[in-house]
Length: 536
Ligand code: ADP
Ligand code: MG
Image (cartoon, rainbow, N blue to C red):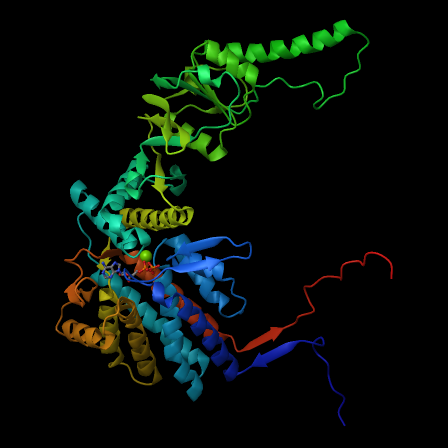
């Protein structure tokens, strides 16, 4: 008898071979079924409740996938591609998951029949490559130098991105706002220069775009009420200095013999503080913002001298103020002069909903802006913020790379047709694989129809026929349960969204197909058992 060789720890589970690939594919299918119904303008939303009872309502693929808390190791790949799509282009997160799921579904029969994974993977890669090439070939590039045309392009892309969200009733209103916001940025288009604040109450249409910085009024001390709340052309000092009397109990131990010495310590502190305040005042600054607290003495001092101050300003807001108004954030008041002070045309503190806001308008370097979202429920505003984020990302992408394709399944149908034509010229197994991918691409229009309650077979037949006749941009017409030229209907999407979605979906497919063994070792990674408490 041969001795048994023990290779892995007790309790380790290993599953391998073809059945493993199939089971991974099935797990992914289950994930895809969760998000399937959220695709498109008629997609449904999901309400997710976390452990602490926090509820989130969302239509965004990446958000849903993140909250699903998937434990299956292979299915996690789909979560990752949704996240990466979100980070890379912002939109198309549901599409990417559905595409990956459908690729896997179409490849399953091949796995079952015993085609080697490597051959399937090669086929998928080839098909993706051909598809991406083709998108680049047919994408439409409107003239970029024409201001109005560029603006229209951006607005249409933003409207398409928001068309599938909760806020689609207001998409015209919001697409203008999003484009305005992005066009305010400088050429690098940094995302963090668009601040998004949420104030409960009011209607969605009350949402406003501030060309400049806005942030919630910070905590303030007595004396604040006496400060003016409006200035024109004020000088703005941005500080990282604490303007507060440091109580003696802090930080240091001082041994004193008598009361006079104690008085000296106290006096010294007042002098230091008053020194700082006097320097700030004499610099001519009217508005003083600090990242650190501004205490009651300082508040009073500024109030007496017709100045405004706000302490504990959040870091990102202070940085955005600096970007917008110029100047620099100072850690000392030693060289406070005009070169380090910012300015803006108009500063005011005003009431927005139930909150008071500090608004800096007409900033000279206005490379930043703030969107203040209004609305009823908290969850609704959060979803609005996510939808605006998608749209902002899309507009940024479209501005950098202005090629667009038609959405609503049009581009997918055209790709499908193209791949099917090419596959006929290829011999061998690859032919089957590429035409399987071509079939898989039809999932997007089919799902759009299913979600809207249309007869998908009927519409897909019409679409195939139209595309065969050379109507390149025929896609699903969501409003009329029919097919329509989505290029004319202005359902535009940046080609980059589609390219990224295709590549990510194909990568995920290849990854899952190439895993033929999962080894689970429950013991490792657990660490030592926690020490016992109490008596035994
Ligand atoms: P994703 O997270 O993938 O962006 P969405 O729920 O936003 O998912 O749905 C996007 C899909 O809806 C895209 O395929 C897009 O082409 C399609 N779509 C958006 N607006 C329309 C419209 N007005 N008519 C038809 N299809 C549309
Ligand atoms: Mg979308």
